[in-house]
Length: 217
Image (cartoon, rainbow, N blue to C red; front, side, top):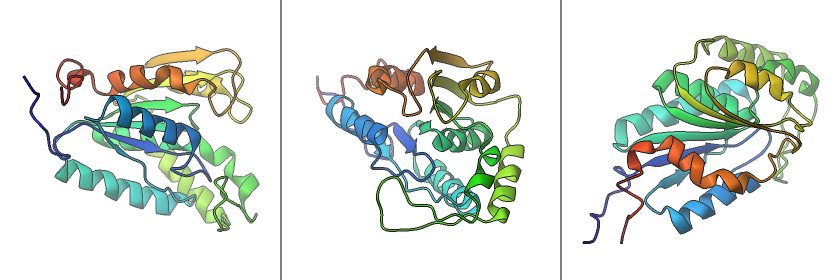
């Protein structure tokens, strides 16, 4: 028997949040998008472009998720890398969502002063320049303070000790009560991410395991 066709509003929604100065064209984002299209077409994929300015990003991402919570009837899961891991946590704590965080930034404001008043180019090669101000660092600190130490969301931390940008011990401590996979070696991009695509989808949408894998058969 053919499974009933679901509208986009009823299907699981996976939101991918990219890192600082990255974009939805990043390798992990595109890999996950392609994998879902081929093997889990029942899942709706969405990856917004995130401003490097914390205040702007928080406003846009907050409104995005509020809109989805109003208009989308299916389950919602979050995946984020580096700075996107922080945004996943910030959103998951507000809405009680599950999130997979990959080499996440735990306290981004510690690193932001080094970027202040510098011309910043997106890693994706876009023809645009950003310049952070001291006020952006303060915005980031306020956002960090709004994330409770006693996490209410449901998280899976994927981290590699070879991360040359962030010390994974910070993430291990911050997500200490959550599911964790910590690997030796690797780097900030998280080498071998493709190994975890199916498992992270099952983590985000456990209620769909027995109902949507046969989608369209």
